[in-house]
Length: 177
Image (cartoon, rainbow, N blue to C red; front, top):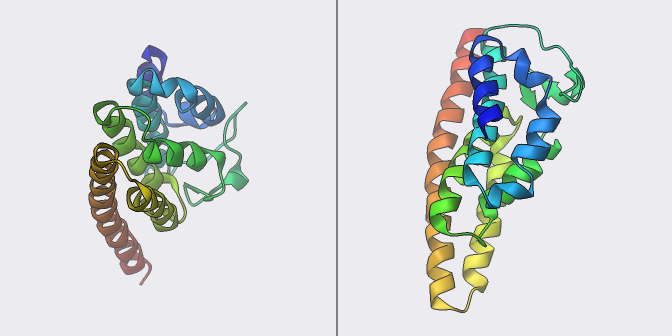
């Protein structure tokens, strides 16, 4: 966890630090260990979000060992098929850990999806559908309440992020005109 925090601090000055280690951050920070230490996934997501800063600064995207290739990214965003998004989706739909441990990583996972995906709305739709299906298929009241609270959390977060995403697209279109 400490290494991710330091990496994030370094990325504030030079986002290419993250770019060269995307696959490592995804496999370690978003791997199976995040359920034992929810801060691990949270900090991994925050570190990955620094890749967007690189695009904002207008720097060229370079490649590094174990990092993201230029063809993986288009205009500072990854294709929806990138393995990163499968891990983020798993975090957002997880219902086998307590809500208090899930909400922080899920929040940052959704933020990361909206910052780095070419089509974040498609990924978010799949997440909302998956959680919604679980709510409708649940029989136990306690389990239904737990899943319903997660559904409301995700729907609310996606709604806000979608509005911001639409505003960003609108702003880009105005700049092009």
